[in-house]
Image: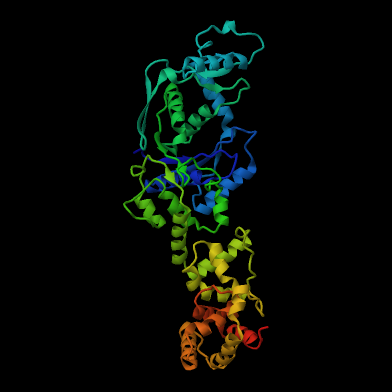
Length: 477
């Protein structure tokens, strides 16, 4: 292990921060934390045509929300272009690179020929050893790496194991394009070196890039970082993750009501494990995390499992903090397909009182809010069709009869209200449901809600009596 571990997350700002990128960032963050090192962020924006500020903002916001804020301000790759060009010139001066004057048409012919002959190396080395005096007039050259033609390049990957590439199959990579712009391969190597990156933890779709980047490291006599290529996340059907599977931006998971702690907990288990343990606190993860337990097989996205993990973290959250989080979430844009309730001091207090019952049933924050809507309803509350069927003449008569018993109750708790309802049912010689159902309809306007005694307690004495009174005096048609 080096004196200081330095990892990096290096997204391209051409779209949102997707679920696979979030897991890569998490693994880098955890490994740095576990080893007392630093975790850095590099925005790989050399593709200026496709890079955009909105994507950068989404990446930064998503990382902050997940608690994966880097230990230093982000590095922007395009801002290092002069440094990349200087390194290309150094390689040219040392004979580790050369100028190539091939036209696009010539390169296309080479690619087609290589394809026809079954060769992986597409460039035929036309300008590899030619005298610069042969250069055509007025043609701006690209600069290519003079890669080894024989032997092999070996990547000793922490996760994938020993991976061998035959050098005869690796092209003389372009380092600088003919317009002077650095290529991705050169930029990554120079930035990783200059940032002091010791461990490159990324998706295994970059494994082939590792061999090509290793050639550039070697040509510069720079030490290789430790490579750890993580298998990709697949959909539930085992196929490459796509939008139909849930390959959404992190902001979408936020809008769907997942907690960042739950999402991190779920993501870390996509590839990494510690026995059969499913739930981890952040401090525990930092203590336990290493690269060795990460498996090679692709992981599968499972929303049922994510819901289960999220439900756990909702249940474990402090009631007041959870209520504040929900209210703050609406202030910051809310949740997908959920209308924001109107908070005030009274409704906020009701929400907090109801929280133990609400969170015990909720998988997501919108799920929790949906079960709490009755707390925010204005009197007289509207009943849906199923609740209205509970308010028969008999049901309303029971509401009228039980109301005086509630009115004499001063100590308004879950237990005391339950005692009143059970006593009434026993005295009226009816099943508990005969009174509980019209009570539920009167209090919530729906047939589905938290327990009826929890509803009575959450609404409080004054509001409960008023809602029961509203329905007890109405005759059904």
